[in-house]
Image (cartoon, rainbow, N blue to C red; front, side, top):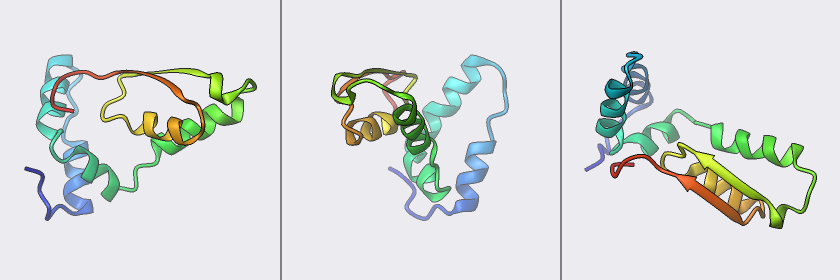
Length: 100
């Protein structure tokens, strides 16, 4: 169950706690953080999904409704949600693991 008493400070501590370059350590870290991942990012005013889609929209010259977008390592799918809101309807996603 997600921790409803989390603060910006606890979210930042969680985010900064994985500094290992080892892929297995990072997978284990994200698996353990999955429960609070979205709440922590909201607390920290995480804007990367919005910025990514704004950048994509600013540089896409074709018909947005015919766009094919592949979001690799998409985590919980925030970019996919924003892509859908921008009228780019065809979304492919690659999500790692069952925890996210």
